Image 1 (cartoon, rainbow, N blue to C red):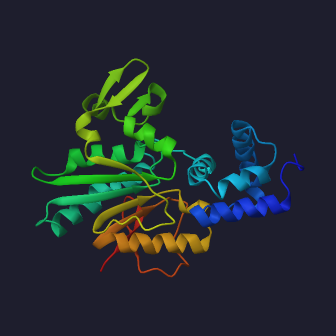
Image 2: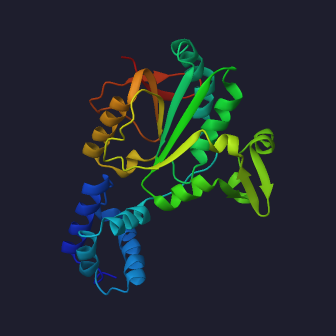
Image 3: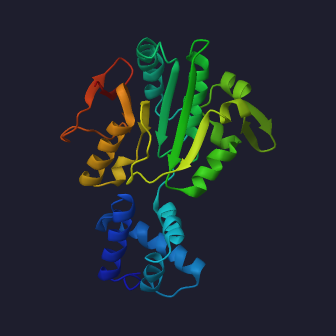
Length: 269
């Protein structure tokens, strides 16, 4: 095992992955990187990591495949319910007052994985927004494989755990071995490949969800991502990050908001 990757190999790969995505591999999670590289070498019929590295620096598509393989796509419907309770009971009522003229809300699910989070947002907004209001959800990820699952909108029986029965009946069609999300929910979501290392080009967003993504970044990459979120968001908008993530100690312009349901951040200006 120790012979598979030299220190020079490890440094080369971790630097390339960091420069391209902000994902930080330390000595403690080196084994994850090694196992992913072994898979790619088998797939490409290569013998050594250095051969594969030579391909990566020339082939952007293969680099995307590697970045896809090193991300962890752990998600589920209504994950961390408290955040959705806060959206329903605090954030949306605020936005209904603030955006009364436009009557249109724009959400971004950044690091959306296989789509459970953006679909949860879309179903909830369908339930709680008054008549005459529109909404759109952009769902982005660095994993093309995960985005294809989200775009398809089919989930096996085990994957729909946590969806309220009423929602399941209303927004999904039962299929053999699983459930298919209905077209009228699918059409409000735009799935898009995006690397958080880059500017998304979005502006005027009302709510950004980026949960359990920043933990894979080091401090510099976290701060750069947070600043790009700020640029993408409208005045008086809201940011949700993972419950184990925090902006404390980071010099940002976001305000911390504590509610009865959950804590999150606000762009006030």
